[in-house]
Image (cartoon, rainbow, N blue to C red):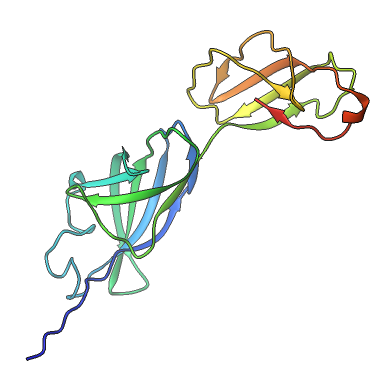
Length: 201
């Protein structure tokens, strides 16, 4: 007697749009996958799957613990007749640190293994604009830095250094649409430090 074993085909991950976002979360992304509908599949065997399982039983989890909200699902045809395309739209939760994190798809609280891992990148604040972009080594010059993707952080203290020298920041900046404009006075440099500099906020 011979027994034939097989593994149900894993759901196929296509892409995530967009594949990166800010730490604050609160925006929507689309996760595109496809599920097999052939007889030798989880769907064909009547097991839990992403096609017929109620959306209330499906979770999208970022960085192992942060659960996305507002999940909706749209099914569409696939070039491969044995698969159906699935677009899941979710609202991304916030994350503590920037970098690449895994995205897990759960049904009934159990992670479903995909054919390839799903990765999302959380990005932190970044300097989008410096006004002006250059200045004199004598310092004491008014300058501004526009910081994008500042999120909903609460500022209690702010330091800005240029080439490790502290700038004078008279007031904490205000936020507007996840941006903040930092206005400051530049420090004095030695002549030998002329050239490109590093700004740390």
